[in-house]
Every structure is written in structure tokens, then in C-alpha cells.
Image (tube, rainbow, N blue to C red; front, side, top):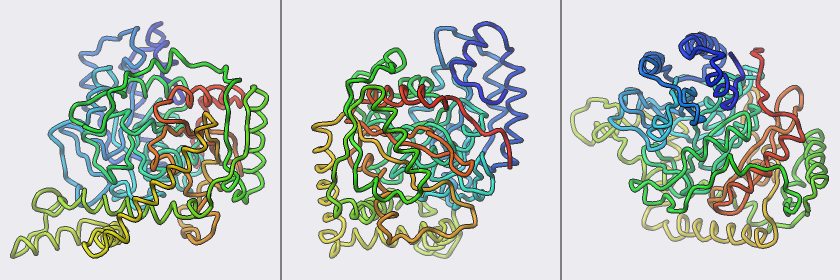
Length: 483
């Protein structure tokens, strides 16, 4: 039963080609196999899922009726452990659901588990998870990417049609590229973040992974809309993304940022990117190379680092073993907090909190945190100049395939790393919709292309991806289970 999309499974249930209880019995057998191979789950919710089937009635007018999915383990799930892959929340069981979990439940979706992630969503490899690294479905000795690596790996394995992720810098789109699936974060505020354990509130986006653009349109439409419990969620009406999908994009204008393109050192990835540009031109699109202020591009990573870690430090101050979090007993409340945070967080999290505290200190706020906010504004203003003349911006998702799990991190001081490997954060700084689509293979590993649009123009991004998906013929590709 591997490799079914939402639309395929829906039609099989509608035509009674499959019994839903038999399907789920096989699904959980396959889930165990995927877990043994990829270590992508934190919790498998077999008992809860099967209990829902006892009262399940298929609705042929609802695309998501009976569809299984996986939630990243920073989505609060009532009565089900939600750890954010951190020792500090190892035993945390929420008493409420995240907004999107409730919305999907009303659509009769069935959650089969919670996926592994980088601790508290801070990371890009999924190597910092409390349960250990997640393997890539195409090669389990390689990373799935992070922080939403578990969700990307599970969808990339073909196990479920979709999974939820969160994206603060590139945490949906980078893993999607590494695992050969579609990853999409819509406009900031398009989907409520209520009940999602935060990283950095001004940058965090809710999104999803699928293996077809059609499925993504269905899922994003189902999750979108105003939520009064999230004051940042938008009042804008939700478009019928699936109904309005079209591959007719001949009037669209596409920008490629020259400075980013120039940093692609892998010849096969650059050749693939050039091929994508040619395909869009053949579809009738205008594709132009544009310049972006290189000083601002090089400032993306330090700006992100200061803002994200400052907001994270503030957001997670409550994880002290007293208000929230696993408690380590000690003689005084202060000692409890110190011992609990020392024991509860990984070394990389502690480093981020130290930096965040430094940037937020009264004597440093103006020259660090406030300055980073001003630079962010300049970065967004430069981006908006491009959107004055173009509908979408096209770029590579990454400059390389997924690294081996045991490999050391790349040199962070090279222009290739500063610009190419971090440019997806533009979509978080500006809050714009951004989608990664599988576009080919290098060394038998998947690579991705990124399409970023204007605020609240999710349909334009989806249509650009839908047209390219048809041309590439990579719809619903998934790993066959090789180690």
C-alpha cells in the first residue's frame, strides 16, 4: 500500500476497491518497517487511529475522509505525547490540540503518529532529536534534513500521503528537497500556529509535505483560515486552491536571483536548474536574471541567527522544570530551574539560548536585536523590489544532495554557504509563500527547486509548481525502501 496519494486513496475508498480497516492494518505493519529503517517516528498512534475507525463513515465529497497523516512532534495533540524531540518535554502530554490538528480531525483525517524533528525545531539535520538521527528514505545513511526531517522522510518513503511540518528558516523546504517530496509553507498568517510549540514567532510557519501538487492544494486549503486564538492569523478568505489548479502559466514572469545562481558549484545541480528555466520558457513564461544586494544576502544568516535565537530564548523561558518541562529535584527553586534546564536541553540549544540572552540583554538590544530587525526590513524591501516586476522567484533548494549522517558541518564562512544554503530564509523574513518541488536526481539522490511568490498568492505558487510537475513527470515519486 506504499505510494498512494490523497486523490488515489480517496477514489479507491469511494469505489470500494479497498476496505479501510484492512488498509490501516497493513499501514501499521508498513509503519513498523519504516520506523526500523529510518527512525522517523517519536510516537506511533495505532490504538488511537484504530479506535476512530470503529465509528468512521466515508464521505465521498470530502477529499480527506479517512486519509492518514503524520504530525511533526511540535504540534500539540490532546492526550498524546508531544516532545518536540527534547528531553525537556520527554513526558509532556498536552490537554488540547493544535488548531490544525482539530481542523484535520473535522475533515476525518486519521493521525497515525508524531514525527521526529531537530530538538525544539532548532536545526537543519534532524541529528539532534532525542530519539536519534532520522535516515533519508533514499539512503538511510544520509540525513533527511531538518528540522522537519521525520515528516519529510515518512512522506518520501511513500508511507502516508501527507505530513505536517513547521518552517522557521527552511525547515520544511530543505528536508523536502533532500527527501524528494513537495514541501510548502504558505504566507505567514495563512494558517494558525495555535498549539504549535514555537521556535521564533515572527518567522514560524505551518506547512506540509506531499508527493503531488494536487494533494498539497487540498491539504493547505483544509488547514487555512482565521483562528481567533492566533491573533496573527489572517481574515482573508481561503481560496479553492485545488479547484483553481492550472498548468496554464504562460503569462507569468519569473525572476532568478543571479547572486544565488552564481553560487551553485555542483555542475549537475546547475545543469538541472538551467533545464528548469528552459522548461518554464517553453511553457510561455518570461524568465529573467536579477541582481540582489550581495551585502544583504551575506547578512541573511547572521540576521536570522540573532532574531530567531532571541525569540526562541523568550519563547522557551517557561521551560524551567517548574512551569513546564521535565523537573530535576534540587534544594531551591533556582537550583531546580538550573538543574532542569542543564539536564533538559542539548548542547546546541544551550548555545542558542546563550546567544539569544546576549542579544536581548539591555546593554546589547540596540546594537544586536534591534539592528538585526532593521537589517531584516532592508532584506525584505530589496525582495519586494523584485516582486514589483515578477510573479515568482525561482531558486535551487540546496547546492548539494543530503549529506551522510556522520559528516561534519559545512564551512559556514563561504559565500556558497552564506548565500546559497541560506537563501530560503528570505521567505521567512518576508512571510511569503514558498514551495520546494522535486526536480531530479544527482548521485541517485533527489534534488529540489524552490518557487517563492508574493504574499497570499499561494495559488500562483501552486500553479507554477503544478505546471512544472507535469513537465518533469516526477509526480508521486517515492523511495522504494533501499537502505
